[in-house]
Length: 130
Image (cartoon, rainbow, N blue to C red; front, top):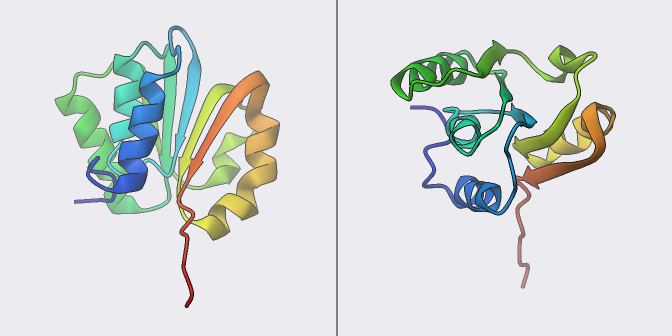
């Protein structure tokens, strides 16, 4: 099983936020898709096109399988990293990954976001030192 079952707090919060957005007929990127749960939810909520990308082979294969199990029609699953985003534009970008990758790829996400698009980030940890 890959990361992204929906039980992890960051995945749960991202999915909760998706319900507050109007996703009808939009283009959405699920970067670091894990199991594909967020991309699948986005399609079920009306996204016209979803691109789900993960760098890990297990996650990539898991997303493909979960898309089949959920009868998705508009999700393209790719294995790789932000280099796959060349010449892509999205209305909504979801990136539920670790802080270092988020910071590293921030300019790529910025360049791929349509005007007035939404970027949802998750994966930052808050540590409390005493």
